[in-house]
Amino acid sequence: MGLPTADPTLPGTSPAPPPDSRRYPWLVFTLSFGLLLSDYMSRQVLNAVFPLLKAQWLLSDAQLGSLSGIVALMVGLLTFPLSLLADRWGRARCLVAAAVLWSLATLGCAVSASYGQMFVGRFCVGVGEAAYGSVGIAVVLSVFPVRMRATLSGAFIGGGAFGSVLGVSIGGVLAQQFGWRWAFTFMGLLGLALAVVYGLVVTDRRLAAHAHRSNGPARGTGCERPPLRTLLPRLFSSVSVVCAYLGSGLQMFLAMALLAWMPSFLNRTYAMSPAQAGLVAGLFALITGIGTVGGGIVADRLSRTAPSHKWTVAILSSLGSLVLLTTGLQLAAGPLQLALLGAGTLLSNATAGPAAAMVANLTPAAIAATAMATLTLANSLLGLAPGPAVTGMLADRIGLPGALRLIPLVALPACVAFALGKHYYPRDLRRLTPLTEAAPVNPEIPS
Image (cartoon, rainbow, N blue to C red; front, side, top):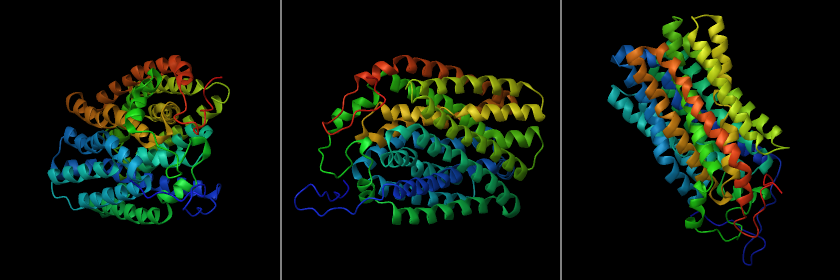
């Protein structure tokens, strides 16, 4: 349990300093976004050095995929319990501890002498990163109004793609110039530096003082917090929220498979060097991030008149990625193929922001980090973990180009899940009731 925040309405407490309602939330977003960049830089730098590790340690594609997939697997397995702990113990302090752990583990990867040692290092990276995405989103959403949820979620999740850009691009250049160990060393040291700054600026006490009123009572404000046994069932209490979990996770399978294997695809199909492949793959990751942010912005804009339009954006993004990527991967190597792959990549993760906003709208604010953890669990177990690993196993059997031709098909069941969610969304919103008398009514609930 975190220390209680002083509340001027309670006897025997001193008033908290007046919150700077404009600047501090954006400072929280900036620093949280910076740590997320470090998170994904540490995770995706491995993909830039796949060719070097394969040659040095004589690894199969399945082994390379496992080094990437183990991180996502640990994120999937641990994100829920660690996020639940953060909701009760303190979100800010949990974020700092997580950043220190994944940074130290990345430094451990730099000194690995074999596949087994690298696997252990990547395992620890996954443990450190397990709760960052879910808790980080909860921290950001807590200090901003409800109407910005899809935009902020898309922007925050998009940081994963931008971090992948930096991790793959910078990692590829460092590996080419100085060796792959220096790529891991740089990412680890950067993460430690950012963790120190975050710990000094963002604290649970300050977050409680700046909590936005549209998100309900903040931790430590004297409001009675409902027991977990009444809150946790609401994580799965509606058809639409379950559909959001499923659709997001399935679509993430496609996005993460592309991110993990694009450097190797460019290296093998276009005969690019590791540095060149890393830079071009970084551009594809950047496109993914732009699509993630854009999907959230478009969803918020369109849902001002009809809340269900968030689902429409997700449905169209899934269908678009399926058509564009399937078409592009059937073509011969060349500019047209790269253009279609870029367009499909733009839509491949545009569902993330709308899905996160829908989960936030359909679950209690008191367990916001746990709700985001459930979404992260779905993303990890359905997408992040199996995406790179399954693609690697298929590549061992039918070749990497053949494996990538099959991967876009997962967008079809994702589209079906989003369509079902849209059908049930208005009914599920009307069933929502405030957890306490002080809790505000969700502005998206139809009147």
